Length: 436
Ligand code: ADP
Image (cartoon, rainbow, N blue to C red; front, side, top):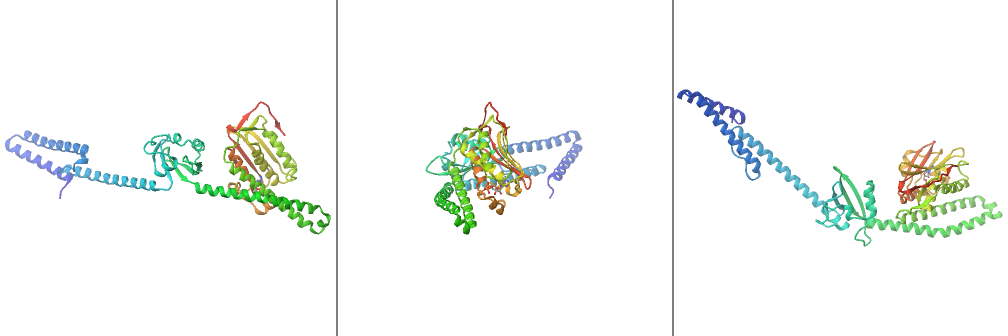
């Protein structure tokens, strides 16, 4: 069957031929052709009018019926619109399913726009964060969840790790909140009830703290007896070596217990360190004396200190962190190497760095060094008499101060451990201490 353009052209040709015949019979060829063309034009105008009406009110009408090229045009449009409608229906269905599944999710989900206004949330998020629908839709989330840790998390814009907070409803509920950026500056907030994990973590901490505490007394008694036995000349003749080994091991156990207690204390103290001024110069000099008295590593430690820079923090914790770094540098650097400690300001605040020319650390181990009991090399570790907890303590102390630890190292060439403090933790006074 002929359709579309061929039919249209055929019809036009037939009309023109008919007009010519009529014109020839009536001797009015021009008039007959004019009437034929006008009829054809009228036909197209009528169809254009019907097309325009259908496009503007098309939802309510089926495609207009027509003939020739207009039949094809109406057919194409009709099919295209039907396909679009089907796609839209599928999309709406998919959206509904996604919403239903996120509503049923045990975790909370909040969708926010560029400026942090809530666009949508599921039931769990509403329950955990005490948000109401529809009243809170369009409100800025930081105005509704005003926990200081959450506000800090939002402002820092570092969403790699979730933030833990106690739920607005209280009742001992703990929440883990995480922002996931998507699209163009859109944000998704995931909320999880972490009460069980939090309790387990608390139990673990309490267990470690209690066990360490209980071990302290028997260890003190054992060390005391071993000390006295070591001083007895008669016993030393027969038991000299085992006594030394036992004393060494009890000293190591005592160090582990004391580091574990220090770690538990740091972990339970989750709030920020105070902003008390600390004289880093004097602190470093005390650490240098203690490190040199260990009798390990190079005979001296070079200091490069900017005495006008004060650190605002908790002195006892900072002593513990900085001394761990300096003692490590001495432990892992041969006597003919160098250890340098520096405390200087930089664009982002200030940095305390310990640099050594010691044995260094292979790159693969660096990301895991701050884990508890992580050892680069078991035999090396035992020789050094370390507890494997020093850098874990450093990490916790720095976390309390909003600071971060950077580790650069090359096997055989040495290492640099840098503690970077933000500008809020640094204050400048007039005087300068210089180097030592
Ligand atoms: P340890 O008490 O064993 O020194 P740490 O937590 O302080 O435990 O350090 C973890 C591991 O990191 C150490 O066992 C050691 O292998 C490595 N390490 C730390 N500091 C240095 C350093 N300055 N040079 C070489 N290796 C180091």
